[in-house]
Length: 290
Image (cartoon, rainbow, N blue to C red):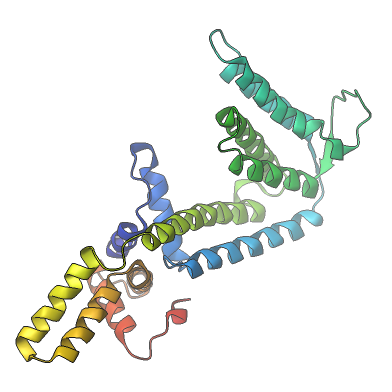
């Protein structure tokens, strides 16, 4: 029912349509619509605020949860990944060593306070500390771009973060538990926030005077002037048409259309027309979409 809303939003967001990422693009658009995130800086800010709230809720749950995670086991999984991926004839050994360094940071990090040269068979930590390690790995993976052997570092780091997330969720109710549900929503919001931020930057770099929006607005204004011979009316309608062609306005229309389609069960085209009408009303405020 909300196909029209998805098409409008996706057209302005333009997430990657590469063959391997079509599913991800669809997920990003659906998340943005469900979370009511317009393609604006405020949309990015809203996503980041909700991400912070979700993380705080996970922290609260894990602070009171029983159980421990063996970091040695997690690090060994990364070592296994490094061997299977990079330790082979013809492969660059620096990639292998880079991946092993990631494993060392997990079970031999100085913050663990292990004696110098110690090689324990288990390194158990509370769930809350394991979650902090997971987030540190995720942040490191995001910052690895442009560094030496960046691909190996990023892949090994993501492998470790994924293994930690899996163990933490297994200890707190599994894939249907509260922590897993919060993590899943957070991951989707992170992807959506990145895509929206990129779209906002792309729009900001476009010419403010030329392009499709200006041509369409000129056509609308010109048609009005030809009919009514009122230059002020023609200018006003032209500017209004141009405003409605911005990602800001169209993404709000898509968000409202998505909600109308879900709540009223109407067709996508009807939902989009209703949304355009609602948002064109003088008393309509963008904040009401929230």
